[in-house]
Amino acid sequence: MEISFTTVQLAGDATGDGKVDTFDLSTVARAFNTGKGDAGWNPEADLNQVGIVDIFDLVLVARNFEKN
Ligand SMILES: [Ca+2]
Image 1 (cartoon, rainbow, N blue to C red):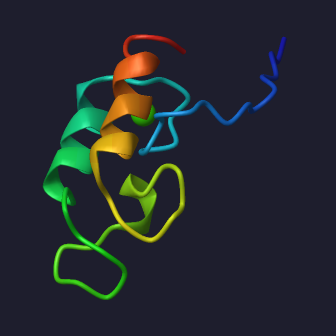
Image 2 (cartoon, helix red, strand yellow; image 1 turned 180 degrees about the vertical axis):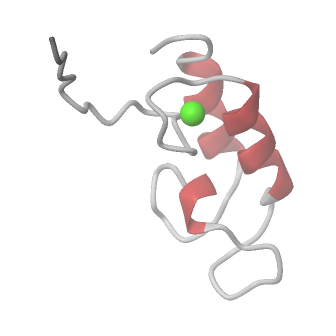
C-alpha cells in the first residue's frame, strides 16, 4: 500500500524535507547576513523571501524547530 503525503510548506524548512531540524539551522546559519548576489547566498535560506538572510529567517527556524 502506498501512502501519500500532502506537502505542506513548513515555515523554517529551508532544506524542503518536511521537517525543521539542525540541517535547516545550519543552512540558514551558513548563508547568514548574505543578500541576493552575495557570495554564500542561498535562496533556500531566505525563508521569508525578502532577499536577505537575517535574524528573521533564523526566527522562523527557531519557531518551528523539531516540528514536521
Ligand atoms: Ca528541513
